Image: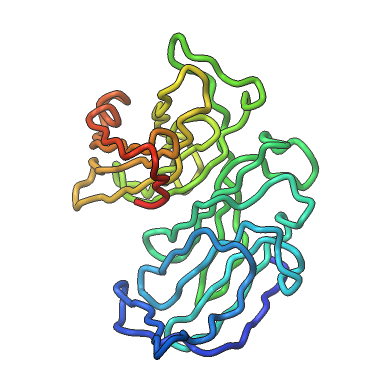
Length: 281
């Protein structure tokens, strides 16, 4: 990160403690309190497991106060201090961008953020990351880049379906979630550009499973948007869900260590009205 920027503004009121800490904005009469100044276009937020910090992901062009870079903004819920951490890899002319995905590791010591690229999906150019998950160290509200977990392109598609040539090497990771599977911390990523979800190890980035979520003849078309995953107290089982922009449907299922991909996400699907655009699970 290229240093941090501190903001000032009217404080947010913090209610409660621990992981269930909430923010309450007091509304009186016809007007609300002045919102806090942050970088532009926040699209995701995550609260640390101890409930002390909230982090916002900004995937816009980047405010001048952030050096025209995309950034992660950290709000200390105990002191109301707000600090911004621009990422040097995400300047206005970068070939990659943040895109929707942000989550803490289970121990709260790391942050995972999705980085997506259309122009250089394999990260061949100097300074380019390609598509993957950016890993940041997180300690006492300080964010530091740690490593990058690249997402290899999808190689196989179902029979009678065609991959759009322009998206041949594109996964375009979107929303993500973190949970335990087979005794390891893993990340479940919705890949908006390849109509699939990918489960990978958070330590080395090894892909454990690829789940097909395509519903149209051409890929991409379903456009998976985000995921939810929880361990539910079982070592080798996690219920999980996928939200897709196309057809506004939810895929849900249970994934055990020896289940097939079809059993994991073909178990059930619920469709919404074609007139709504669901964006959150």
